[in-house]
Amino acid sequence: MQWFLRVIASAGIPQDFRAASTLAKMHVYLHPIAALRLTIAFSTAAIALAVGYWAESWQLVTGILGVGALGIAYVEWMLERRESAINKFYERLKISNDYRKSIKDTDLGMSDENLYVFSEIDNLEFVVEQYRIGYISPALALRAVNTFRGRFGIKGVAERISEFAGIGCGYSPETLVIVRGLLEKHLTVVGGRDPC
Image (cartoon, rainbow, N blue to C red; front, side):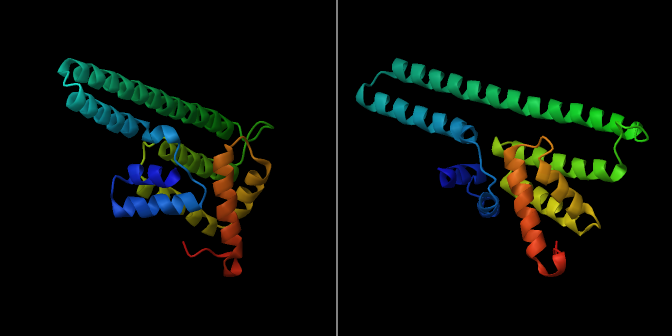
């Protein structure tokens, strides 16, 4: 199933297909809903062609195509709502983090270093969620994962990410799997230095 989703998400572009395959190895999977639009379009076209050929009823074909268009519109609307919810969530999270930064000298505050690490994990999670619903190309999603991995070269970042990933900190299970996998790979590289 995931192979089919990767083919659809990559739209035949070799770079995107390779990126989608690499992401799948990191347990970054496309949500089946990402392929629903294309599935409805192909199914509707096949049914309409079959009905047009055997029944020779062009009114029925028009009706089938209309129902297919409504199905695609519904899926697109549903995906747009998901994307909007993701965007709003991260906007609200930024407001909260900015506030915690402004009161860092109190018990509710947070250090700049911790805020930076959380923002890097948040960025990764945002891109992965956008990719999972088919709103970001596989190549761009892989670039975001590699950029996140590259942050491990900053002194103290890998340790803090490891600490936060160990307790979860409210991140999605998918994000934690990716982060923990990247950390494990980072720690196995000679001297703990990742070449990214």
